[in-house]
Image 1 (spheres, one colour):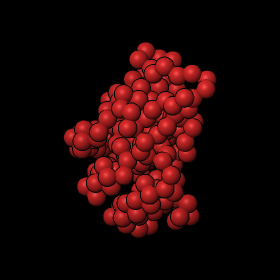
Image 2 (image 1 turned 180 degrees about the vertical axis):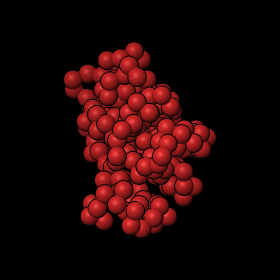
Image 3 (image 1 turned 60 degrees about the vertical axis):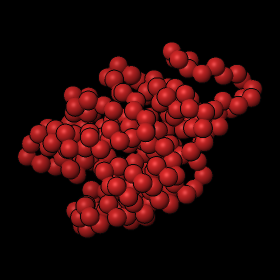
Length: 193
């Protein structure tokens, strides 16, 4: 167990009080950390982008191209609302999901928001050269990422919990950081014997 981790025994299990909604920039690790955290706690992992792709039978980038961002964001809100009404889980959201006030209200009412706070150099190291990020398909992707980052960070700061991402953290170590942050509040995450 990492520093500050709650004491657990082989006889107990984690009890998740609310769905944990991971928010943050593209490349912050929401999907990878979410999967590791869900496995660690023993709850389902959900990905709002994957659910949208499944419903539309096409990639997010194709939805953006065919129908535009406004259409995509409306579907995203519908999916997040539906997933929050389901069993408690770890929910990874797209980088822009938390920007919508409606989504923030849904998350505040039905779950808990956790911001995976990765700085710009770390994000760039993870997303550069990837063609799966429609918002970065520009002539100057680093400048675009910087603009998106600067616009979104003030909104991400509204998340209920902030967990700092660091380049040296493995996915498992980052999941441990999130688990530690959640377990400081028994109404969110508690070890029960």
